[in-house]
Amino acid sequence: SRADTARRVLLYAAGVYHIEPPEAGEIAELTKEVSAIGRNVNQVVRAMNAAVQRGQKIPRLQLDQLAHQLHQIARDNDKTRSLMVRRAQQQRAHVDQIIEAMKGGEEAAPLD
Image (cartoon, rainbow, N blue to C red):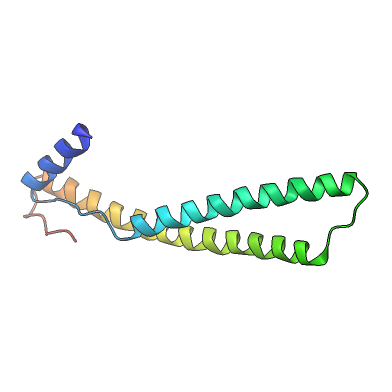
């Protein structure tokens, strides 16, 4: 966006340009994966509910597959949470550097 471009130009001019951390791509991929698994889980649960309402038994294999998918969602959520915490810490350090530069403190150190 224009606002994002202007922000980057101003930060670059101030010597505190911030490059997007590598975690951003990982977080986006994990989010897509969890979303896809979630849609699949919803479809499976709807089918299971319909089967139960018709008086049918749910095969053990289906229940095991559902449990595996739920476990995968939990694992991906934990990894995403960890990446987001790391990214938030990096952004906090970046903001602190910008504030120091704005206060007219010492020359801002280059950011990674």
